[in-house]
Image (cartoon, rainbow, N blue to C red; front, top):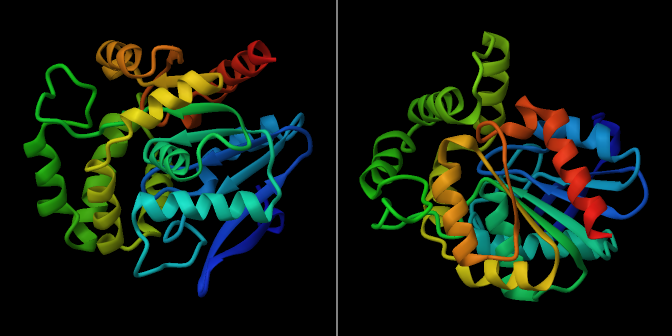
Length: 275
């Protein structure tokens, strides 16, 4: 994607979000996960912009958007999304959230309802990321592990870098990455300062959007795509929380980057079936 395709949208005084808006047709809006940027969706933009209007957002304090010392939570990210959709006059959209980007969509639903949504796609995120009952619920990990990530790693730049490097190689992708690939992915995350990354991490982990997940699947066509490593427990949890959601399994947490053709075909198939 070229920088020329981007623009900045002011969501409040002094805070601008970087947005790429390419192609024409029915809109598809992609929202990246925790500390990541528009750039991870390059293969999706290249593919879907041939047939659709494709919008990709750097949330506040991510990528090229303003680094803000306030509003680094998903309540604010939900209202930021609403402002972007309003400014761009987006109607009848398919929203695609990856990881904590799903929280942004569920928060938007909490605040604004289902207005202007045609369909929803949630990529590899539980609507309740943290639970003490991790043996049965679809969660990001046991409470002690999540606490360690916050207190031992996300307290300084070195820890942030080590945490993202480990998560990228162990969870996000399934193949061995080249040094350049790994460095590029880690650098995407490091564009968000560690102290903001820590705030976003805790805000996300303590979220509970089970009600919004159910409302979404009951209201519009909804697709949930999850990584292979937790597919069984994620499927059972999804069927309980949002039973009308279509369910697919692919790769690791960053499946759309590692397996773009397979991922894009899953979305194409879903969009064809909803018409």
